[in-house]
Length: 273
Image (spheres, rainbow, N blue to C red):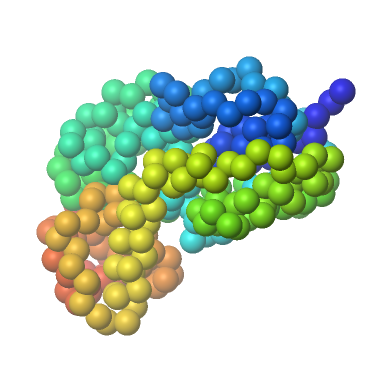
């Protein structure tokens, strides 16, 4: 029998959800979803009640789509590089980040390597590279999702944000099981607790970026001195997206949001990378 399809973009935790559906329905016994893995990719031969599928021109009939919004994408992207397909590129670790990007041979990462060579080999250059990467991926991923929505026969959508609150996640799992013809038999609260524990660094990173951006919008003080390179890059992207134009990159990144006074690129003295 052909299984229904769960359509997802990388980094949106479809492997986690699929395993939770099989476990909570009683189809399989509980197991460690992350054994020797960064993402929830353990036991790839578990008995499925729904098949996961990345966007594909060949598959038209979709049971469930994991839908996300622009505000979700930072967390999706940094998790994708860390655990999607076990790429193992932790963008939340600044130590030797440029070298790790340049030497990582995972298919998800290949393509970044030649691009990063165009940027100066220092923190400013690396931050500018990461900003360009985030800018491209935000646009590309949203366009890809909209293409799927516009061209596929999708029965149901579930909200990516529901993965990060236990009650909402359990309700989402129960609803999906009902639509698949199953019942919620095994409680998976403990599995969700572990999921949130593993995602905590990524959740906290997103929170810092959004707090900094909100402070900048409101002309309030927010300390930027401890932001990671990827967080500075995303903050700069958010500012550009809000203003509607590219801004000059800083020779030295400001220490607080009240010193973030962006200049439109080419209007001031441009720092040549």
